[in-house]
Length: 448
Length: 150
Ligand SMILES: Cc1ncc(COP(=O)(O)O)c(C=O)c1O
Image (tube, rainbow over all chains, first blue to last red; front, side):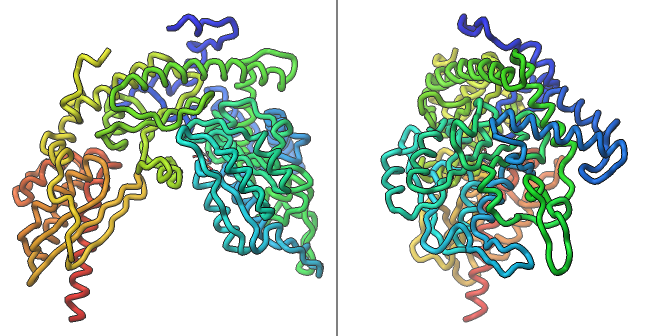
């Protein structure tokens, strides 16, 4: 292991790997090498125990009962929301909307922006925020979940989706972005914080500043930002920020939508149902204040409590008096660890003849996509799987990006702080095996 | 190398992947169809030339994984010169072979296509092998439609 990994402020990886029991499993008879963290991360024991403890000792519906268990469940649930507020640096818990995933968060925003807002029973009818001829700017590297909801919204109101181009290294073309903003018609900018295909960390703060100058609202897809970066929505000045919590060491089925209070208050409700209302009659229904207004129906209580435990777990990797301070210190270590791993992996992968890295932006996160000259990514995926190595092969829900890169698909290894340089070595060995099988010319001497 | 993988990526498959047969566009095909695998984004176009119910020429274009490329290549060799009905019956037999798990029965009627039998142990890859066949089937159905309107 390189000397720089033995840094004073380092994570105790052996201890951490014990918390993630699944990392010691075998896959296809080989020790599992899990490099598909961008698809979903593994969950530490502490998260699973919190979910178990909820079902074993506190299970009840939330916000509805006067009884003991319901209050216990509600307390845990509300506490989780406050932890999320701290994680994202939001002004208050009412700016944290719990969803079932990043996808739902973006759909909520796109739907509300393209729907008229008319308090039920009143004759007042406000036009949708988006209207005919308005422009929605989305980068060429967006995930389908930050494209399709906007296409649906644009169709609803007669707006247009325009593409912010990217450079060959996989970075936003900021000059082109500035030029697009000059049209005077841009109402929304959608940008992925960290690209799930390229690993690029986008200059979100700068992009938000420019968008605001042009009078547009910014929604940041933080599905991959949350796990890798210490996010502060106020510092970024994002109007909306979404998380996909199963990628953040929490259970599946939970997402977060952060939104500026004033914007969320101006939105019509998204889903109607229980919990999101103040009073209901057939003549007039009034809505609950934030965040309940956007949380119709029974939420994923256990999942949200699991998310609270995941935030606590991350914080436990750092030190400090407050949750915010512990998260600051934990993410400093996580970031340092992931940087080391990423640089090591990028270096070793770049040595492989015939391998092209897609996404080489400086300072990128640990998401390493590549293509081999003569082997389709699916075959790479299957052969690596035979070696116990889990990567993803495909278009990563980024078909417009694949078209831009001129490839049908890529192979992608995505790292988490619990990965090791040995696992990266296994990946590199595995790629050489793939090459051996497919191009007989590949000189075995090229192998380490 | 994992021995099961050798079973999947047999030499014949690797060879057809390296140098696919009949990978070209046909001028004036009787019909053509496009196939798409949403999982991996792979596309294949099958061109069919038929005359009097016989496959007189067949070719494909597209970029896919080794399994789908080899399957398309082997398919064109298998159905050329056969009747449309025989091609359809090969499709059914092929599909049965790759979707019946653990089946070790031999399939002499499938000839070279049997090298793809290993796919049945890789559920996520079965579609790669059957995509060209589904596309051929669509092309043949197109012919039938045309035939019926004549
Ligand atoms: C960048 C990005 N955005 C959005 C999503 C969608 O997340 P989910 O499917 O959990 O809603 C993902 C996950 O695949 C992603 O990587």
